[in-house]
Amino acid sequence: MSISVVLFTCDLRLHDHPPLAAALDGTEQVVPLFVRDRAVDAAGFAAPNRLAFLADCLRDLDAGLRERGGRLVLRSGDLVDQVRKVAAEADADEVHMTSDVSAHAHRREERLRGVLEAEGVRLHVHDTVTTAVAPGGVVPAGSDHFAVFTPYFRRWSQERLRDPLAAPRTVTVPDGVDSEPLPSRDDLSGLSEGLAAGGETEGRKRLTAWLRTGLAGYEDRHDDLAGDATSRFSPHLHFGTLSPVELVHRARRAGGPGAEAFVRQLAWRDFHRQVLAARPAAAAADYRTQHDRWRSERTAGQDIEAWKEGRTGYPIVDAAMRQLRHEGWMHNRGRLLTASFLTKTLYVDWRIGARYFLDLLVDGDLANNQLNWQWMAGTGTDTRPNRVLNPVTQAKRYDPDGSYVRRWVPELAALEGPAVHEPWKLRGLDRAALDYPDPIVELSEGLARFKQARGRD
Ligand SMILES: Cc1cc2nc3c(=O)[nH]c(=O)nc-3n(C[C@H](O)[C@H](O)[C@H](O)COP(=O)(O)OP(=O)(O)OC[C@H]3O[C@@H](n4cnc5c(N)ncnc54)[C@H](O)[C@@H]3O)c2cc1C
Image (cartoon, rainbow, N blue to C red; front, side, top):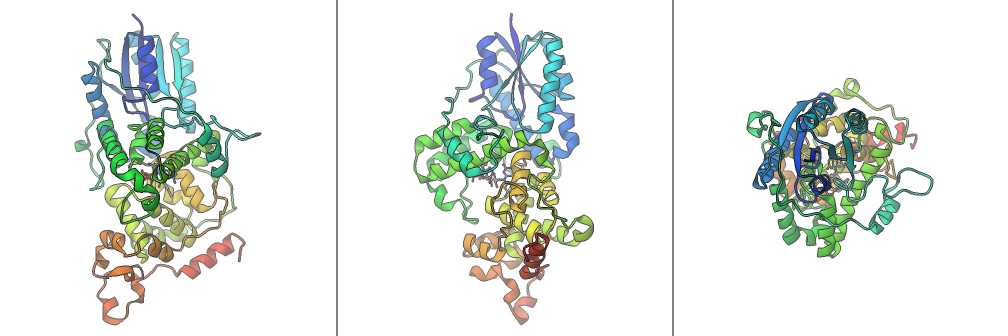
């Protein structure tokens, strides 16, 4: 009897799952395995919001496997040790898993390959599971990755994607391979109140609804902060409960400008993954240094605290930071302008902002988070590294009647229309009645400091 282990990592689904399909194709029984990797926890990625979403995903994956006659095996510890142990317990000949892009993932895969090979077990690593186009799948002449999005997107768009795979009908798991109890979000504390539910079932429900009612309007509405009209697929893409290949196929089949704009965003995700795969150090170090001497916790402690707490005195920045804390998620336009405010207006190190986002974001993702932070800090792939987003102009453009600010900053709820974006313009008793801080910095001062730092004054 031939047996395979399918190691689930950031691909917690049954639909369109190449490692599972390949294992079921070649063997009679499979062990669906997830390992809580201690090294990932120790590196600070075990944030409560993501652990809760992960718990939902594991329970849903287990339920989906049980409907098909199988079950999920959960272990925790060193991932390589655990996979080796489970492969030995099941007497498996092969292990199938999904490729990943971080330095840790590369090292882990190499170590796993060595350990398994020594025991006569083959490791198969599959790509296009968590990206539509594999990192390195398209490269420019003379380089191992694209450093600029537009030419990348041109090539990415011409790639022929594989067809999505159906979910398996039956999964047979051998006896005698025990599982630890699955975690539950009820056992966790410190969660954001408005945290989304995880799991493939939930992701697929969202997908159906999005194709019916969201996609067509995406191009016009994706920047409307109050409208909240984006897909909110990001945690599902991070945990792999939705497949990028399937999303691109289904959006293209729907067609139209909304679908095109949405597919372009999925390409941004692949773009950042191919940058990180080629330059793993970009998770912590400038991709393109501008020789910044950033302000730090020591020199800008109060400004950083005000930014984190959503009390900078700039309502649009504060609204977005409070959405992050409340939901463990923030609208993309909010992420852009809060990151610009921290790195450019306050001239604080992008790593401090990126760390705080990773502590809270349910979709917190090394490639997308660190490289978007670097993009906004001007140390990444942006071809205009010194652009600064003015929070007042941004607020008037993307929250024209102020509803987003009133939703998240109740102290300002009585202010009508766009006046809510500039409470400092109120006079006398009207201003005194507001329990809301004055701006912690003048925008002109922040801009002058940034220009001087970048040698542009
Ligand atoms: C400072 C900063 C930090 C960010 N950190 C993360 C992060 O940790 N995890 C994360 O998934 N995204 C991150 N993003 C990218 C983006 O903001 C989110 O993916 C998006 O807001 C998620 O909402 P959505 O799923 O409704 O997106 P939609 O607008 O519906 O887009 C669909 C999908 O496309 C991808 N996508 C959209 N915009 C981007 C982008 N700019 N870069 C890469 N992929 C994109 C996402 O996977 C998203 O789910 C960050 C952006 C910035 C500016």
